Image (cartoon, rainbow, N blue to C red; front, side, top):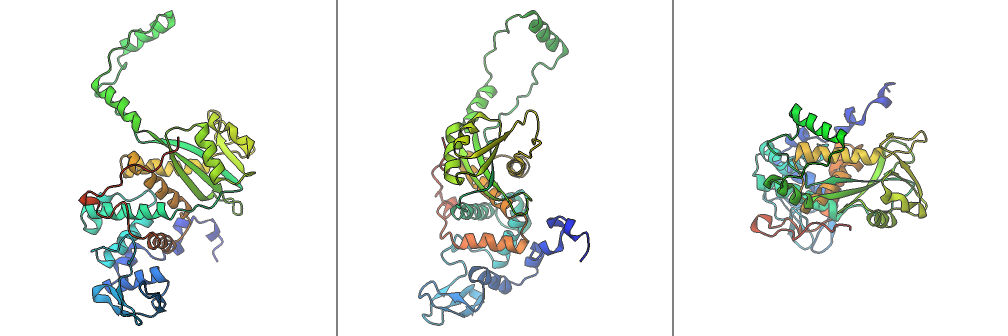
Amino acid sequence: MDKNEGKQHILLSAKVRDFTLWDAANLTEEEAFWKFVELRWGSEDQVTCPSCGAIAKPYARANRGQLRCRHCDHHFSPFVASPFADRKMDFKKLLMAICLYTASAKGVPALFMCRLLDMQDKTATVLTGKLRESLIQEMDTEILSGVVEIDGGYFCGKPRKGRLRLKTRPEDVAAALEAKLKGEPRAKRKPRSKAEARNWARRSLRRVVMVLRQVDPQTGKGANRTRVAIAYSENERVATRLARILVEPGSTIMTDENAAYNVLSSWYDHHCVEHSVEFSTVDGVNENQAESYFSRLRRAEYGTYHGFRPKYLMDYAQEFAWREDVRKKTEKEKIQDLMARVFSTGHSHWWRGYWQGHHREDEFPVQR
């Protein structure tokens, strides 16, 4: 073994590329069909019939994209009772879309996917929406323990700047400074413009993504489990409720200097780092894993999707919690993990018939 192999980043290793978009593109339609059979049941010979429950090797009707049970003669698809049960897309194209989705570090915009894989934007939007729904419906719910980092970040409701930049002329800056030095009262504020009024209305859309990340105690190489929630503000009630529900009592919790987390000392070994002074204390108290999650989510908000909306903020927050947790897995392992959640979800409730007007009524439950 190469002596430098242990120092190589996981994403630079050849073993992480065990099933890529290129591999999916080189499959035939029938091979892609059997690939989904393998992802659903683990093998082509031990398939469970959804009608009679028999476990055996089924007859294949690959041209129709179906299997036929040897015992009850029932015909079914690899996507039976799943979000893609009514799909009309080719198996190969769908497999390529899933490979593209899992390989991305900061998400895949629907417009990019539709251009790359030659599909309608509507199709790509619903496809990625169903994947996020599966990640929410099948999210991990185990209690966090050991060392847990907690933080909150504001998303949505970003104000927009107007055409003019205020107080940029030298004479305006000098006049304001002179008035401040003389102790003169501030000039009466001018009425808000229409743009500023819209910005105040836009602030009502602002939400806080609360993230709780468990640091891996064995390897010491980052976090291995992530939990997220949406709140209106980063306050004491929200912090207490989430910690009591998601973190085992007696665990070590690391936060920043926000007063909302002070009460956690009653149930946990609480440490905080003062970010206005340092990123990490000399004792190693930090929030680097929580900040790593927010870094990925913010890059997606600004660079990939160019904005989030409160109604679907939880969908994106959970997507990137999953991306953080599987970041060290191979491409094949990511696909297997994602499809295991998809096949456990059942029919889509939020995206089935979306373009016919069947929308989710409101945003995901928000903590207060």
